[in-house]
Image (tube, rainbow, N blue to C red; front, side, top):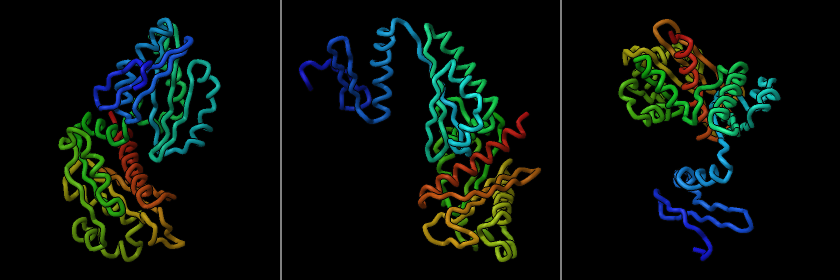
Length: 295
């Protein structure tokens, strides 16, 4: 360690942080592992910055969106100039969606919170349907919370995602309260034998079709006797596509006792990316159906 470095203790790892000060300027050096950096930032850096700022408060709110491209969100937020009068706005896109970060700097915490709340209201007026959480959590956690709040259950039928959706849902603590089972029906035979997809449906429309996805969602819900059944079938790639059904084509379905809704998506990522975005798409469809029927 440099002799002139002030050490910041790392409670979660072995690499300490360092603070260098010279001529009224301060440089904070932290390890790059996210959980270690965040813990060090919370324990050491932020308190020092707050003291240095003379009590000024910073409030950040992350609005998590999915299913809408960054450029479309930007266009829909035609009141962005009004929002930026009270907070700083950042669009942070990823494979799974766009995080809209609202940051307010004020003389005290109450004023910063009020500014963020006012900005969030303006954002929700324009793109509220695309926002699944007001904190930095994955979509599957937001869906899990909705299911737990409603006391409802879910079963999943997957083809091209190979169990990814079930894995995401069961990563959430307490998932046994809402997740009943997952079926990976990768082959046509599995779709027919396990989910009772009619052979004529696959013969007429193909395994990758709205009709097959709909039948899979119904089949897994009937099999598990759950409130909801969701399904995915598609072409993850890199091979297997045709001009009529290209690589990245995916159908997702969500069914309850009243209806089965199907969406068509075409993704343009590699095999893993297509699988991940397909999983995101079916979870978002489930989220929308849960909210539509929310009391």
